[in-house]
View 1 (cartoon, rainbow, N blue to C red):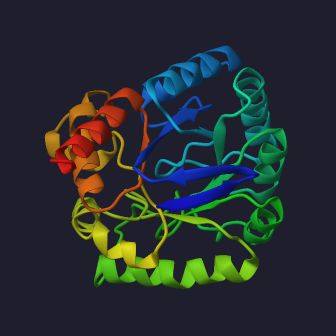
View 2: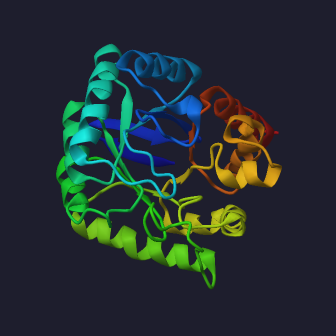
Length: 276
């Protein structure tokens, strides 16, 4: 069991849990995840919590390949009102802020977020780790080769599992030395990885349990699924469930998804299966 101190609220992860994704963006890769107003975002959060989400992940910036990043100011304008709205209605909600800007992380936590989720593992903003340590929140440290602008331009590894594992061994120690008590690791499916890299990492996911950190799995509706199936993100729910199941069997503790109900059902069915 993993226990995380989420800004004074204790989160005990005995069984896998679900993180619901809410994008306050006009251009996220999955169109149905985009929320253009505070009201629609609050409605989506309400639905996700009712369906069994433990964490709501709020992001104001798309990180799909080849997109120019928006400014910190614009990101703040998108996410802060939504966080405040959710916390006002559901004060005990554990919200994670999906950002690589330390200033956004700080203001989001002040507005009510309890976890910082950084696709760069603190590498895009050198102030991030110090900021997170000062905020006393868990840190989701993700692996990404390159940046969102370059990551899918022929990603290359000699041994993808070994190299990603070495990244986390080094990075989690840097987080510890910075004063961050609770680190969650995210392999970074689709971030500087091709289909073969993603599938290899999924197959080898149990290797990362040696880090003794909760493993977050973020495969929801991603291109590895819809390219193999020759469909679209909108048609990738069944494929998402298959990969989530494989991830859970290999040690994933947090499923980051667009579709909470189906992910919760996946966890319940596997739990029943393991109890036999």
